[in-house]
Image 1 (cartoon, rainbow, N blue to C red):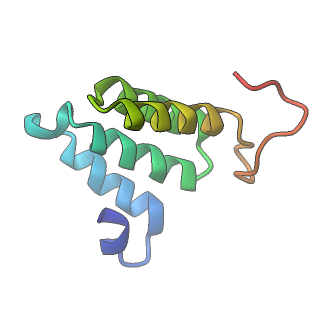
Image 2: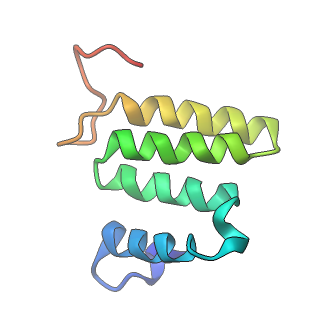
Length: 94
């Protein structure tokens, strides 16, 4: 939702909006907020930060399949090259 509303700023602009939503108590513990944040950070090639957000989403999720998917995405985000966003080669996966 936020990414589609960001005029030309793309993922960075959308992330600002999602982070602003996080200030509201009602959404601080919502897994979708952290999941969206992780996706936006990943689009900006910020793998470690994306992984952390996705791990937070997984921890808050009450759905077993969603938890597994978010955990897998966090592992993948951690292993991506921060400059290109491509899977890092030669670096061990954490």
